[in-house]
Image 1: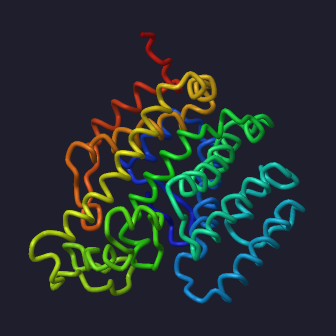
Image 2: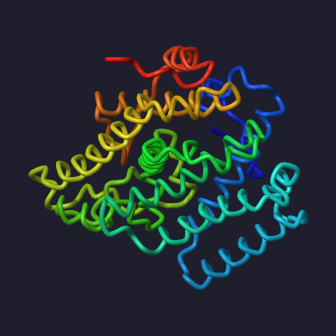
Image 3: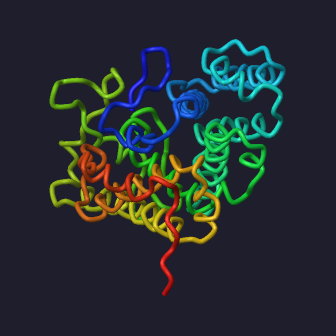
Length: 316
């Protein structure tokens, strides 16, 4: 995924988003991309904020901006781009506030355990699913239908996004994993952050800013103790994400919600994310330093199988 330098999203050829939006009508495609850009702006609005006072002011400003959007007079480029389809829609405003609220909570309050973490992800990504489904079809029930906010689908997509952004999140001071998870693995966020890859092969720094030490001098790493622990905590989350998404894809409720032609891009996106997670389970890349992704051909084949929407679960 790439943007145009102003926050608008333009899928790269061969990317997951490119294949998810194949066969999508141009008008729906543009609404989807504009809505996705707004969601991403809200979800990441506090990524580079360290001062709680600044964070509070930003969140307050966004509350006012979403009220302006509801009233038909937005100011921000991303809300302006969505004004035609969102102005005056109370359900859409509530969904956008869910995304913003979870972002604000997560920035400074780590979840205590997996139950709380997954509940946050389900609320956040469930709202995102409703907003994206509405962008594609513009039907009133897209925002109100609870099946669209499928819990397993939302949780799996949320875990995938978290893992995809793991180095950047740790570097920016996010705890990412729940307190109980760190305790069970004998780790803490700082220990993980020390192992984030400092720079890419081209010398580019993470997010354009220096990254904390890569941890190569950690005494515990001499016997592989920290390395094993950090791989285990990531592997557990990969497994949880894969299980959640695979379970969603085989759930009749998912098929009922996403077999509609208008919602097919979301079904393709979910299937493509699930394919990537299966690859991560098989190859176990060190997601603090590297990643692996399906080939363009593999992505196309997944997209083709879901070109009409969610596939009907197999009968056993």
